[in-house]
Image 1 (cartoon, helix red, strand yellow):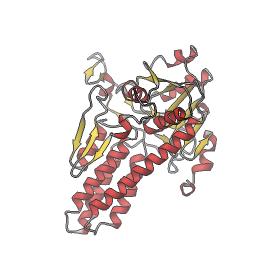
Image 2: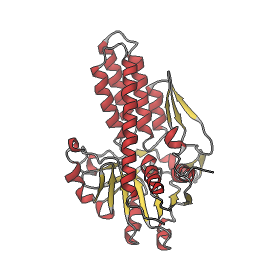
Image 3: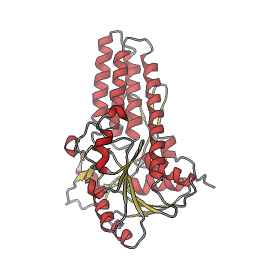
Image 4: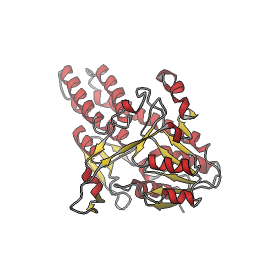
Length: 345
């Protein structure tokens, strides 16, 4: 029988940092197949992130592991400035892979500072691995705190609609609700074109012993109209100080529908980004439109059609009921006052 509090495979075995390799669980095919993409240097890690081998918070762990590979390579160089040059190049390459979510920027920035300070040390690679793993522990701690705070908004008997793959934020929230004895159900949008909702979220939720129902992306408003949804809860790739929610494209239309049917929308993020005052400060990733014409490696659109794939959209604060964070739950209008100074986090 499935342990209802067990952490899903995607949380516990997503990125493995080994002696000479980074192994990344291929989320493009999971759970239909469980395979890893092996990366032997930071460039291969960067390519894996760009090619959607891992998404959501996965790139946080993959990029930091890739930087450790760069530090190990740098440690073989005798010249300290050459070491720093290699590390700067690796940092720039990894940060550019997925620019909308600030997780990569923040962890690589932290690792680069530590690497520059330790560039002349013989144990550079080992030192950076320790620092990277410490960052992983903090990330998990922040996720648990976020989950506990978000779970306070979940009521016994709720049927929660979620979108895309919310990583440990949504999983920790559900786990905390289960530990509190709350009975819940989850409805997952399929989330085209990679089907993160129907594959990743639905599978992970079911691994926890929660009833998971998959709907296509065009069924959400109808489900709300039928009274099937009590709450809309999604992760947020970035929350600006203005209270705007930047998340997987499709979040905006769900928020509009939720507002129309008086369904609360809770966005979850470990910390809003103090460096982004408004959405104008965020580079919105647009992916190759060809991706929208395919699904699981098969073309699903007419060969006469072209595609468009904006990876993220922006939900205004007026459509957001609450923003759950690692340090509490806030109305979107309070984000600037609480998080404008990052030193108080």
